[in-house]
Length: 521
Image (cartoon, rainbow, N blue to C red; front, side, top):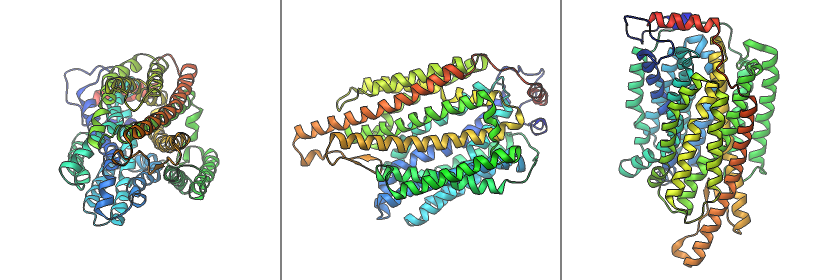
């Protein structure tokens, strides 16, 4: 929407028009605003996970109840994400983004002031209602500001918090809980949020709401509860160690039925639907989305397995676990700028397969882990995985967006965020179920509870027995990594066969919008 972008205030005056292929100061400032919001939203998930045992003790509660501090946030995300595309058109992306951050910060402060487990869960849901819109609204702003010719590089910037969140979250959370107080895992969002709001107000372009149609209330009534029920069932499957329980099956089946009804409704409603399913008639968007879903299921599931292995098999604490996972983030930081530049110069089909292959190789290496695997060897696998993620995740999102017209960006961004949220939930649940089955096969009576593997107590067992049990636990983790590797190999095959090997041409609409955007800079 050229009207939306023409009011941009971010770029500083220049004697000559900026290079349409370069990352000018104005675009980098817009990217910094979006990254700040993304950091809050993504870090919050992993930071809180580290504090769950502390919250159990503080509120004299139990893990099944406190787990809803994380699950309630996830369900709120799933409920509100579908509204983002409509909200961006109805109220403007800048207003929506700032409102989302404000709501997220209010929920964070209230969570830090919680007096019992019930109040904390309620405030976390409020926090999630804001957090769910931060990422898709931010991606919409950044995609429109960059244009298709610079999208790869700016999406690489956006990908840093997405990949570093699961790495830095445990480190930050462990430090705050250990050296300060659990409340600071929420209070820390206040100064970051205040900075993000100030920067957004001053930097982001003024946008004009362009309400093209009424909110699809029926679609919302089908999609949001459908996603919430499906994710709820998946979350319960982790706790119940399988899919054979009514509390798992009933919500998942009900959610699947609602989602199927939404698909039929959306196909009939067309462009007025909450999510425009005609986006998937775009071959590149459909292929990129499918590849990304397979990758996210395996990688986010693997991200759950690695901390469990380090804590349950190697006996590491939360802070040390986060530090040991740092090579993954380092690899991603090195790879992402390179991958972003390459995607802007060539087709995503020449970049993403390389990253997926690197991730698959790292997972194959992790199948060899034992109770005494060298941390240097483990760091090598994690570094390679980070490089692979840097060359695949954001290039796939870039590929999905590059061939779309500007008017489709908001709904496409919402769709990709739904895919990411659903994929991470599916991956977490599936990998825990596979790990549980593998442990039971190797250790009679072995199981997982709340996502933690049952490891032997060294002070209550013979050292040789302990070492044997830890070896069997490590073997169960290695077995589970084979499943993660298989999913990535499948994603690699889809990417090689379907994704384009050349950069898509710029449409007349996008070219005109980019020119107007630069002239206003």
